[in-house]
Image 1 (cartoon, rainbow, N blue to C red):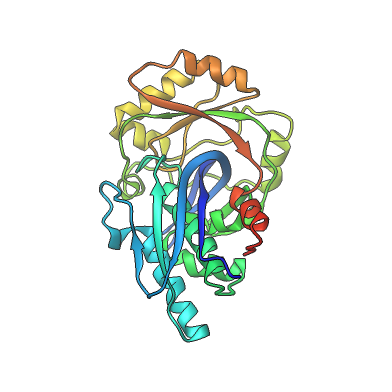
Image 2 (cartoon, rainbow, N blue to C red; image 1 turned 90 degrees about the vertical axis):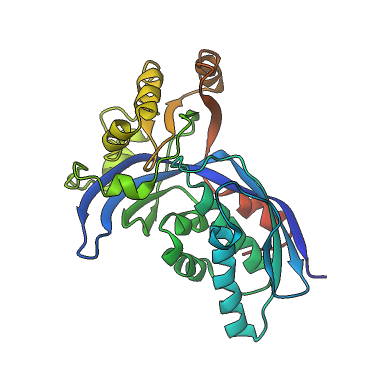
Length: 300
C-alpha cells in the first residue's frame, strides 16, 4: 500500500565554512565560492497527502505568509510538473516544528523547501530524479539545490554548481545574535568585496582534511558588511573568537566555531552570555532525510 503521510522529516541547517565573492555577472547576480556543511540540527516537517489538490501549511510561521513560504511555492512547482507528467494534481498538508531563526544564514527556509520537495516527490510518486528536483528548485533560491544534493559540497557560480567534498567530523557551536540580516542589503552594500581570488576544491581539501580549524583558509566576504550594519554580529564574532576561528555563516546573522569534541563545545556553551541563544551541533556527511526515506521504503 502506498504511503499517504510521513512525519518527523528533518530539514537540517547548513554552515558556509567560507564564502568568497569572486565577481558579479551582468544580470547582477554575484559569483560565489563556498563550502556547504550540513548539521544535525534543524527544523522538522510533517507531511500528509490530501484527497484534493490544495497545498496547505497548517502551522503559522511568524513573518512568513503561507503564499510566500518557500515550502508552498516549491510544492506548487512540483505539483504543476506532476500534473504535466501524470495528468492530475495531488495535494499536501505540511506542519513545521520551526527551530532555525529567520535571516540567520543557516538555510532554514531553503532546507524546509528541499525536504518538502524530496518527500512530496516520494509520497506523490512524481518520479523526478535528484537532478530534476534540483533544477526545478533553483529559480526559488540557490541554496535549495544543495539540500537536495544531499551531501557536503564545494559550490561555485551563484551557488548552483556543486561538487561533493569531504569535511572534518567535528562539533560546532552556533550563536544566534538575535537579529535577522536581510540578504539583499548585504549583497547590495557598496563596500562589499567582490574580487576575491578563486580557490580550488583541492586547496580546501588539503587544508582541512586533518584539522577542524579554518584559520588561514578563506573567510566570509559578507561578514565585514554584516558586522558594520549589525553590531550584534560583530559582538558574537568577537566573543566566540576567544575559543577559535569564529565566522559568520551565509549573509548572517549566525556565528559559528568548530571544535574537535562535544566536551569542548559544551565548555564554550557553559560560558555563553545569557543574552544569546546558542547551541551545539555535530557535523553531518549526508542529508539525514535520505536514511529516513530508505528505512520507510520511500526512496527519492
